[in-house]
Structure formats: structure tokens, C-alpha cells
Amino acid sequence: MAKGQKQQSAPNKDIHARISFLYQASTFLANQGPGGQGLSRFYVATAKGVARKAVLRVDRNVKRTLCKRCDTRLIPGVTSTTEIENLSRKNAEHADTLKTTCGQCGTVKRFPCVQRKEEGVEGEDQNVTEAEVQAAG
Image (cartoon, rainbow, N blue to C red):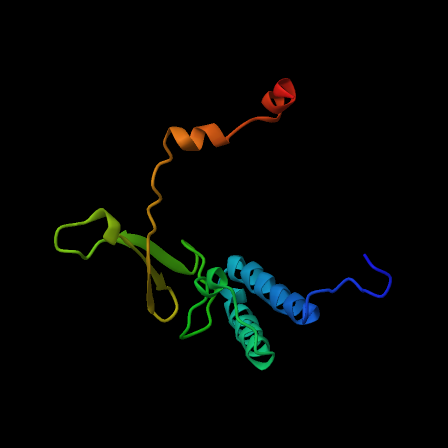
């Protein structure tokens, strides 16, 4: 680095840390059973409020694990149920959706299931081990 330049850190690092802590605490309490559900929901609501006040976007993967209606942390088999459904007329494979139902309020979330194409011979060539690189060079 040059003499006058400082290494830049991520802005709002403390806010990200607080949101992360609240999310992890809500996950822990949601797994404890019915006794921790109320406090877990409070932590999720607080994390949403902190993100809203700081004008930060919450990651899509985090948002998918939270109930919009009651702020419950959606954990499959514990606080929610998940199933794959296909409502297309001809049962097309590309039309599968992941249906998550909240166990507290019954709200349903649906997300498309992305089907990845299988890699052919070209994909296998890219997976070169370190031993092969050392033997070649």
C-alpha cells in the first residue's frame, strides 16, 4: 500500500455484527422448544428494526428463514414444515416450488426450486487436483 492510504474496512461493521448476533440467538432459542419462542421472535423483530433503521438490506437467504407475518425463525421440522409442490398442469420439472409453512401463524412462503444442469465432460476437466498440477509442472 502507498504511504498515505489506509486499508478500508466494511462500513457499518458493528451493525452487521449486531444483526448477526440477534439472528444466531434467535436460532438458538427457537431450537430450545416452546419456552424460547417468544424471545426468539423478539430478537428477529429487533434485528429487522436495526436493519431498517440503518437502511441495510438483509440477505435473501436470511429473509427466507424468517416469517414476515409473525417474525418466527423458520426451522424445518421445528417451527415450520417444508414440502416440494408442483402446481403446473403437466407436472413440468422446471415448475417445482419449495413451500414453507410457518408453524405459528400458518403463513405460506413459496420459492422456485432451481434445477442445476448436470455438468458434462467439460466440467470434469476443470477439477484438477493439486498432485496433477505438481506432476505437470
